[in-house]
Length: 125
Image (tube, rainbow, N blue to C red; front, top):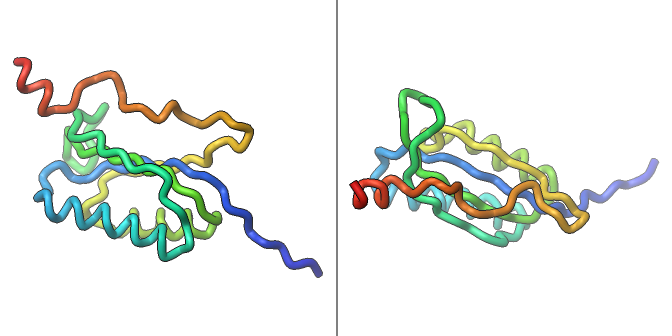
């Protein structure tokens, strides 16, 4: 019987917060997610707040959401725990995680979509 050590992998998770949340509550939800990663001996590599954007379709009766992207490294069990928490957090309306390719490429380019955040769109109108 061999003992298999879980190796760290790099992941990219994007989650969408309820756009109606107060700034403090949204920030505490983000801090909770960061805390789960660090408590699970993961390392946060990058966090990007893409702001409020229109969703492609309604999710939980919301047509907009606040997008947040996190790149982190950790063991697969950490990803499972993170996704379990996403499912029970009322502030999170949608999430998706992807393991980044170890061969140097990544699953995404790591930049925000081409459309402008909601605030910038309103200023131009």
